[in-house]
Length: 175
Image (cartoon, rainbow, N blue to C red; front, side, top):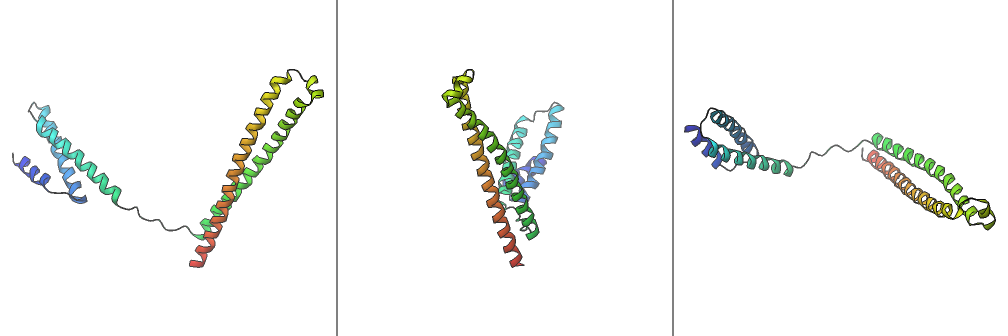
């Protein structure tokens, strides 16, 4: 009976972060004791249920408190790190340029096929030119879309490299 009264007094207080953690620990200890009593055949359901609800409330309150605490600000990156990031962005832009060049070759081939399909003299020489023409045009459109996406990614990488280089210069000036 005495532990239940002590627990009621603890539960009555309005917990802040440390108090809520201590109260939650006390609830967990009491819950384990009640579970042991229940296994021994004693009726503990009502008190156990109340403690479980309170433990859940405390856990939610601790989560809210943790969410309200601002994250510790990490130190700004060094100029060297910023330059490394800029180099990585330039490398990415170069890689994308190579992909675009490869795609341009494929695109040129696909366009030649479309032109050949539309040329009446060459169309007679090709077998099934009607279906090939529609799929060839669709293939050209697909390649154009891929090229546009790669060009956009390359522009983003180049812009990031410029931005990071400027940040590195500004960081050096601040030192």
